[in-house]
Every structure is written in C-alpha cells, then in structure tokens.
Amino acid sequence: METLNYRFENGTHRLTAPPEVVGVVGSGNLEVLIEPAALDGACSIEITTAAVGFGQIWEAVMRDFHQRWLLADTRISINDMGATPAVVSLRLDQAVQTMLGDAS
Image (cartoon, rainbow, N blue to C red; front, side, top):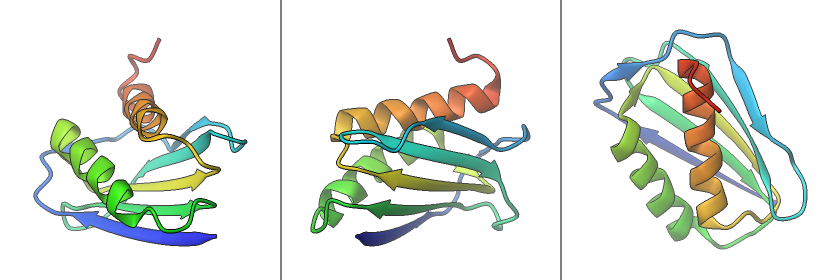
C-alpha cells in the first residue's frame, strides 16, 4: 500500500453539505470520502492505494480535478484498489456532484 497526499491552494468553491461517500473499494475501483474542512481555503487529498509507484499519474489526475472544480476548504480521502485514471476522475466528479445535490 502507498499513501499519497496533495494540497491545492486558491480554491474558490466551498462545499457546505454533510460528508459523502461514493464508490466502493474493490478490484479496479475506489471509494471517495468528500467533506468540508477548515483548511484556509485549500483542498487536501489523501490517497491510499494498492497500486504502488503511480504517484506522477495520481498527481496529474488530481491537478486536472482541482482545475475543474477549484474546491476550497474541502478534504478528500480516497481508498483505491487499482482504478484507472478515468474511473478516478469519474468518482471524484460524482462525489462533488453528490455534495452539490445534482448527482444522477
């Protein structure tokens, strides 16, 4: 297992809904917990993954996610069991949409 931590500053969108969990921890999938947190305007992301050695890919996916949503005062925890970057992006977007109340 590997744990990766990312912090993105200068977000502009604060989520105020209660914490949400989306996805399931299983082969090729992941679970995302998203919650409001007092982080001085930052978004922090902690990833626990079974796929060791993919830090550069995770960083690229997290940067892309941050650029799309510009979250502030948000904590995200990810438990991963080998999800592809596309699945990671999908789950992260699903988590934010759920917090905003417009997930389908």
